[in-house]
Image 1 (cartoon, rainbow, N blue to C red):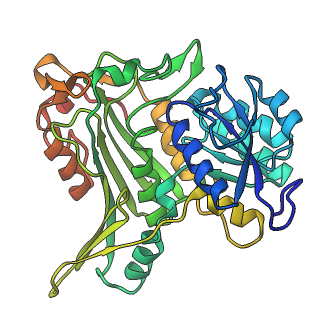
Image 2: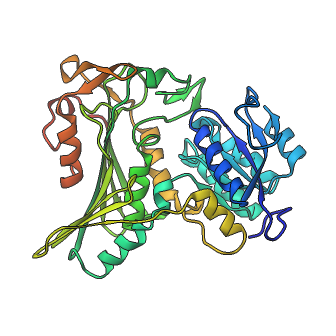
Length: 390
């Protein structure tokens, strides 16, 4: 799928939409790929222009707070969009209207309706749209699928994922949309499952093979919050697929100790555990000692460039994130997260200020991933006391 204005063998012209916050990591990745001759940064869309120091090494890319103006001035082949969740759809559609290919940060949209609008526009314009689930670029995924297909762990019994992270109270004050379900009447759907630990959800679904909306039969949720926010900071979701398989994800931003998030494929004769940020896989099977393997990873922007040159399929194609968006929609439509009672959490010092810790949550998150069960099923008193709707 060659892009407009993409000379064969020449760096792909790219614009970056959102260059601060998490966008800085994209800026540095573009710098890496530009040094390799793969891309060329031609424009930056930011409300406040970047300084010369911030754009050092890029020459003098065009800058504008208006994406349409920037696209008209720079005629890029691809755009990297890393902006607040509730702006994703509008900005992505603007790029698509200009025939620009996309690397769009997750989640692709705050609602399933907006997601459908986006996917239809992408298909109609015949542009590529990659979603920023970096874990889907790991070579561990095809390796795990091959092990399961070969019967390494027997009959698959389900997939569990766990993410126990630590976030200070300041994390939810970093931007007006942080910790919000809605902002000025517009869906945001920020939350543990849909934003910081969305990779756990997407990776677990990908390993199950449930990637399209039609693959999802049922979504159950438990959404709680220890912080004084709108969104969930301690959550659980279980997806039942149309094949009858089960995928359960437990997540919290209120852990006592920060842990590496992981996905476990449970089998009748063993299990496979994938620490997706580390590309590390542990194979445990009956009658054999455990084995650990490290895998490589393909950068998603680099993969997009290769795709545009006809050398590779997209690793995180927007058309294969429908199942994930069914989870986002279930969270969006669920009752507001239940505030945890004061005796369920305590305040602790953090690196940049106070943080809230849910008592016993580290063990509960691990147990939920192991048993594919929710917090209420596991006996958490605060979950039984006032369970949210499914």
